[in-house]
Amino acid sequence: MTHRLAVLISGNGTNLQAIIDAIDAGRLSASVAVVLSNKTSAAGLQRAIRAGIATITLNKENYPDRAAFDQAMIAELDRFQPDTIVLAGFMRILSPAFVAHYSGRLINIHPSLLPLHKGLHTHLHAIQAGDAEHGCSVHFVSDELDGGPIIARARVPVLENDSEETLSKRVQAREYELYPRVLEWRATGRLTLEPRGVQLDGQPIPSEGFDLDQLPAELATAPANSRRS
Ligand code: GRF
Image (cartoon, rainbow, N blue to C red; front, side, top):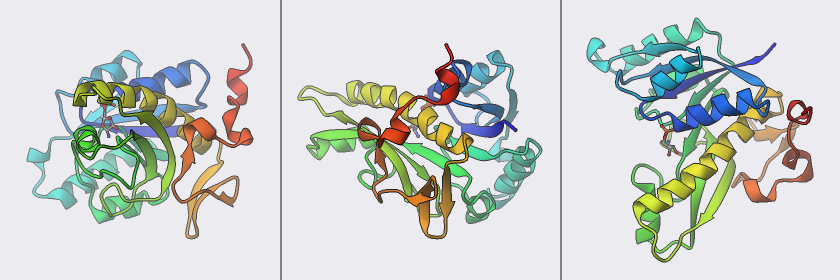
């Protein structure tokens, strides 16, 4: 059975696009079952529609509180029987009940080398801190904001003349490589979150996650279905 992704967005959806493109290119053996947005204006919704993917939009104004909103998300998402919930620029804090419901199936991409620079404006913070390198991280989601177990990271150098914009562009380019790669490990059943931590092929992974540029040999090769052509 194809691994079913539910992708949650609030904005542009360029990571969603990278996931769609990776599936089309045979680099990711999954399907996007549904895209959910909390913003009707999210450009990413058009990307989903263009790709023929079902979309759901929920407006927080229609719910009395976060708990009710999150229960509505659960009800909508579960109709699509998702194997993995993919947060891709979803700009809402999730309730503990939502996180618990999808425990071990909920993954986020964050634009920093976690545990550095949690929260917003990460590119600016990396420049202001004088960091020599910056990047992005994919992690399982826990109740702590941007604090769940890290799966993998990708680095970029911070250049002398970098602005928030130039740095964010280079980081985003790496996000588009990193997220589909990690999702392929999920889709092929290799990546799980166990009580003893993140496991890849049944083995614990480094606590800072894998480095995309230094993957062990068994992870560095392209997935079988992309080697066909
Ligand atoms: C990305 O930079 C991601 O790291 C962060 O939100 C941004 C989403 O961008 N969580 P997009 O909507 O995928 O273009």
